[in-house]
Image (tube, rainbow over all chains, first blue to last red; front, side, top):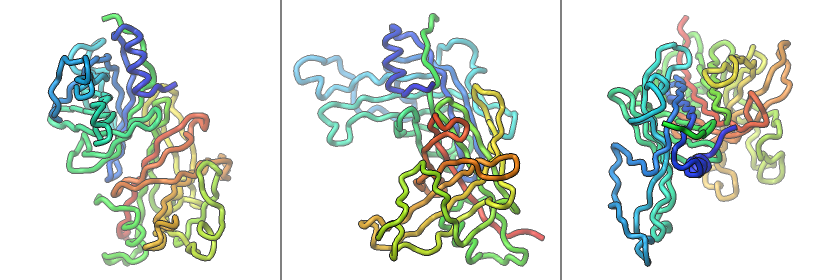
Length: 175
Length: 185
């Protein structure tokens, strides 16, 4: 049974921060083609985006009212870097084509800056996918167990596409 | 292919911009991502998938559709809602693309319709509305169940969420796209 990103993060923290998420991704291009992808991604306590700059500097201030303004850690899951095995586990492929494209996928949930929530500084979810020369960073809607976003196609960035991402499980991981 | 919103596809089907001596053809693609992570997809083409000036909903009771009343289905409601459907034309197969279940094929009828609404009356709930309806078919082609989904359009992408066709106890995210073009010969 699927778990929401928020629950997956909570479970990972419960596992001492060492956990793996089983990720399924689908992408439906506006021009018709459908891609499906799978990945196994370790939990990352503070996951930075590659091509969307963080506009609030990190701060160690956690006392007094400082934490109202402080950028919080942004936990998530990412296949970048150390993983449970070889990168061949992380790929997408067209539904009618055996050709496989390796990818890195990252999901993160930014809790936002507490005092700025009324200015849309509240929680937000991002999906980042990198595959060869193409990369997309997507602001996603968290809809139950689904992360859904509309943005450039990872296969052809000149096309628009709908992305749906879900986590089927989060399990402890001993690297 | 070229991107086409559902309304553009309907407009083209009603009044093609290009010469269409042999009529038009329609391609529709539906994908479903359920909470088990299973991705299913299907493509419907001519002669199974055609434009209809009116696509009535069966209404499988899985969406919050008003069945009538003054504003929802009364005298202000249009008498016909155009769209595209495979009903009565053989349907299509929804196939597992990947996932952790054995390969599965489900025979379905796919209907998508767009009510343009009443301009200026959106505040009374009479704005545009789009529905995707999927009927599950028996081997003999009879509808045995299905889902009726209120959809949201994002340019050419029609999105909805509702019960999974593979397992109605699960939810699923659906996406639909359509393209209409002149038929060649």
